[in-house]
Length: 198
Image (cartoon, rainbow, N blue to C red):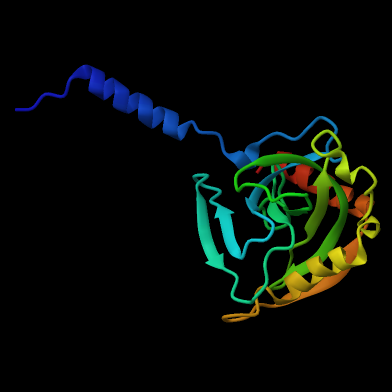
């Protein structure tokens, strides 16, 4: 008969407990001044055609699929932590930076607008953001989406028009851009929804 030494049992229990106690990155707290600034956990680096997703249940970064159309993500794409959209999932954010952001990294940003979008009949707005001045002062003069070169805003729009076209297509409706104030209103609602008892 094999007897397992008590220290191995204790080590196994400790490992199991620590694995279960891992914090969920989507619960990462927001700064005190939210929605003026807020945190985004990046999932897809700018320039990628690989759609990564962080699994909400266990926090593992997975490859969801490859974008079939010959387009790449025009900005870093991630989820706004401690937020809940209309479908209960964290709000999506497009973060414009000078360099792509590694998947899983959290960045403090501020909203400059929102791309109003409906995906398969559900609101799926994308908050457009830039790093806070403390993270990267390069965007200090960008307060609204209109402060970007017009081609940069059009790239965001164009990407979402076509990125789901193949293989089976998707029902995407784009309804233009909203300003930074509208984006902050959406953020406030999402932060409140996240805090609401469920």
